[in-house]
Image (cartoon, rainbow, N blue to C red; front, side):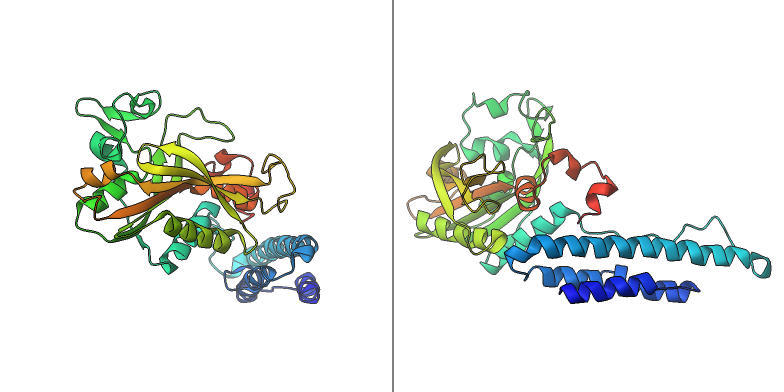
Length: 337
C-alpha cells in the first residue's frame, strides 16, 4: 500500500490541466467519491494495527497534496480562461469549482449502527420530537416527582396539558407497542433534547439510538448476546463487554453497558480514565409496568431495551474531545471525515 501511495503522490506532482476537461479528469481520479482516495481509505481498514499510524500519516499527506494540487489546477485553468476572455463571453460571477462534501461523522456512525442491527433482524422506527407527557414519561414508569419532569431538566412547550421536546427516543417504543401485538424488534434513532449547560461533554440536543425486543421467553441472555455482537461489529473483534447494575424507571433489572477500551486495550488511558473500560449506554429488561401501560400482558411476554448516544460513540470511535464540534459546521473539522 505504501508503494501505491508513493506512486499516486508522484502522479499528483506531475499532473497538469490545460482546460476544464483535464481538470475534471483529475478531480474524478483523485478527489471524487469513487476516486483513488476513497479506494485507499477502504484498503486502510485492512492494514495491521502496528502499521496504521505510519500508513495513515502517508494517506493524509496524499489527501492534502491532492486537494492542494486540485486548487492549483483550478487557479491555472481559470487564469487561462480569463486571458482568453476577449475571444468569448465569460461570466466572472459564476461560482468556482468547489470540492465535494463528505458525510458528517454522526451520520457515518448512525448509518453503521443501523446496518449492524438490521443484520440482526431489527427494523428502524421513528417518531415525533414534540411529545406529550404520557408517551415520554408516564408510560415509561417515571414517578410524578421524577427530576426529569421538571423544567430545569426538560424543555416544556406547554403545561396542562404537558407538551415537551422528547428527552429520549423511548417515546417511539411506546408508540410501537401501542400499535399491535408482539413480537417487536426495532431500533429508534433520532434527536433528543435536554436542558443541559453546553460544554465540551454535554449539549442541549444530541442524537440517540434505542432498541426494543419484545416476544415470548425473551431473557437477559438475549440482551447480552445482541449487544455483544454489536460491540464487536462496531469497535472490533477483540472488544469485550460488561454489564454494571444500575437503575432506570423503565427497565428491571437494569445495567450500564461498558466496552473494553479499544485505544489502550485495557492498559489504561485518558479515554477510559485509566480503568480499561468505557461506558457506551444503558440497558435492561422491560419493566412489566411499561408493558401493561401499552396493553401487553407481562405474564405472557417479556422484552429487553437499550439506548446509547450517537455523539458519545462517535467521540470514542474517532477520539473527539468536544461534542460542540458536531454542530458548529467548522469545515476544518468536517474535512477530516
